[in-house]
Image 1 (cartoon, helix red, strand yellow):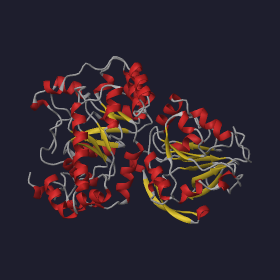
Image 2 (image 1 turned 180 degrees about the vertical axis):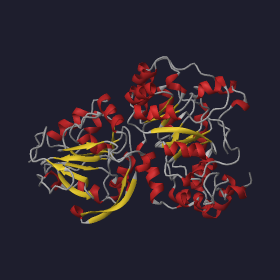
Image 3 (image 1 turned 45 degrees about the vertical axis):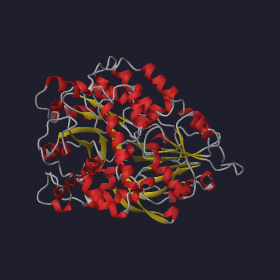
Image 4 (image 1 turned 135 degrees about the vertical axis):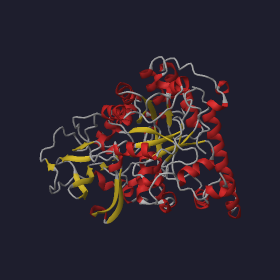
Length: 220
Length: 319
């Protein structure tokens, strides 16, 4: 993020758990505003795409002409993006399943990869990049199938990456907004999020050295 | 049912493990949080009744956040009569396989064996529903005994809290299902908000009297009083037939909308479904609701609630 821009945080509020994100920012003393239309996107430096149904959120983003506007603003280096669960799915690269992805985060995420709702779970997991641990809630969660060199894994559950970042991008397969701890939301607001990404050691998932479909990332 | 019974709600199901019943509702234990988590993921969305794989696909393409699998939509249950039960296993499975969004299915009130069948099938949410013929006229299912989350209907704050005490992870305000008349959903949304306001305004010393009045467990009443809100989301259901109906219930505080007969009894279900999704997402903005109204097909004809005999009303089932 360019240094001279004021912090202005939005949470996409067309469908999904936007209120929980706004509450998490409240705890940090940051007033985040709900975003449902193009005008509400104006002037934002940060946008959360929350958990919800990725097919519904995609449908509504297209319907209200927001999808390309968000991608363009990110590519211009104006808008950092944080996706949780459904939001993380959308940030990634096309995975050969609906809905179409933004293609911004250099990773492939598959929907409902743990199974149905009865396979949803929560557990306390370490977040070494943040120097803390968190109770992570996984609800009909996606799994990261592939990580390209443009993305860095910040936390794992066993062999599964659960928290990733790219330059100006943060993605969680779980729900930090339901954990009662705003550490990850604070991390999202750090200017260092725009720093270029170090590649990380492979563990379980295939790590590609040359990212497919890699977008030009501004601010590097 | 006396107040004493009301504060000892143990539900009907389970196998002698009723003592565990309150734990989920009263402490934010992990399993309950996971269930309520899915409820939160459905906020701002439309959940559509479907009776076939084709209808389920139409719903998903229109932007539904979930589908509700059932044998007959409420308007047909009302018209045809007979005993309304859980949908057939074949029907539920074909609907599950047709879509990637969550599949809900209805079980009869108190019918914990139907609920076990639905859980075993991997249904994502069970609706213990007054639209089906109740299996138990005194007890609801002990929903704490299940890993799958439940949604239940309610007409008052007391009913909301009794269902939460039994383990419901989501409440839907009851309208009069299958009528296309939204007035009962409106009445009960307003009533629940009014009662919630009265509870929040009560003094600490009034809480036991509030619990008695609401016929709800004291600890849960106190929790809502302390937090100033319900521990689970509240959606609206029953009689929603148009985009403007959906915008109305959202404006009255519903966090999502269930649409039953309103879609597949309309003239053009795909258009009506998409229009209701649109109006729900941006219900605050009149120009968007106008667009949605233009885009919707003709609404179901419906039947006014005052034309429905009291004994034919579905909303009075459950307590």
